[in-house]
Image 1 (cartoon, rainbow, N blue to C red):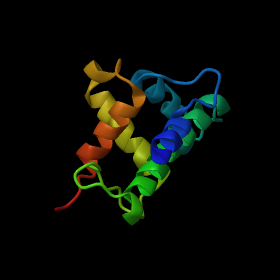
Image 2: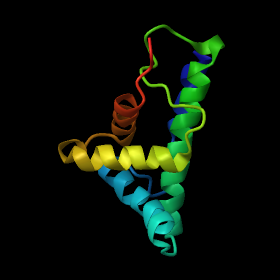
Image 3: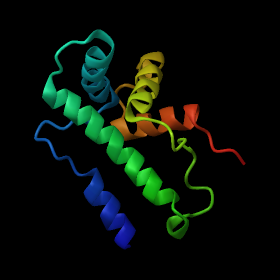
Length: 123
């Protein structure tokens, strides 16, 4: 029960204009790529929203995959330890752009689908 409350608190938005859909997160994460790939001055609110959300999901999955929290069959993606936030953002961006019919879905669901697609756990 404590874990469910902890996860619910982690999923609560910290920004007044929190992104809700994959389309919103795609837009926010574009600010990160505009900065890293094109050298454009970042728009801080979307930049921070993207990086914070991506890091939060990775942190939760890291916590969730720790031995004391493992539940067989529940974690269906395994991000390599050496992966960076920028790599995860690129994975999400590619998946979202390749699947525009899913952009109306909740951002977390599409982020998880992108991670499952790119980083399946090895049996």
